[in-house]
Image 1 (cartoon, rainbow, N blue to C red):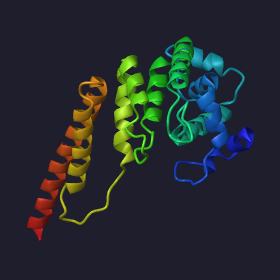
Image 2 (cartoon, rainbow, N blue to C red; image 1 turned 60 degrees about the vertical axis):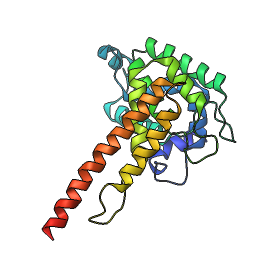
Image 3 (cartoon, helix red, strand yellow; image 1 turned 120 degrees about the vertical axis):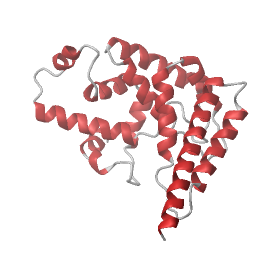
Image 4 (cartoon, rainbow, N blue to C red; image 1 turned 180 degrees about the horizontal axis):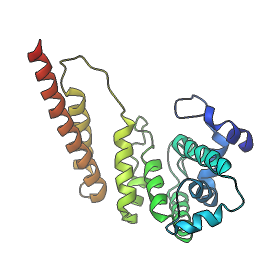
Length: 224
């Protein structure tokens, strides 16, 4: 099934209702497989090492595997240790991350591994009763990884996507997002200061976007 999913991964992107669940399970359970996937996408810190790893493989095949690998990581939603009730086996997740980071260091790819881990952790659903998920917050606090934090924040932002509004509505949607993250930041400022800082940064970004959209709506109103 994993081979079948791999061959048809281009049809199982983030917009598809079908997901490559066997490959997702393998990523979530096998740190070595995750490292093999990112090795096809990202150069090693030692660029010559990347080409040595790919010796004997045609450029066409390298590009195909790299595209499939990128699609797989972009589609991946299953956080290691995630249970059916949306709780997380924190010990399993922590162990998975520790092993990944050790293997990534050996492969010269710790920065990009942290980047992908941050993206994945941010995909935890926010519409379930176990959100906010403090096991994720504790792990982020313990890791002290700027790259992971940055991509966790960026992915939380990107999850909200674009919005539909009237021509003169202004930045009300952005203010709602800002209020949401501001409340989270305040709730966790004493227990998880790094997380609180991330949420505060998102709140400020949304407030800035709200002001910009307000100004744009005002200008468009004057034109009419």
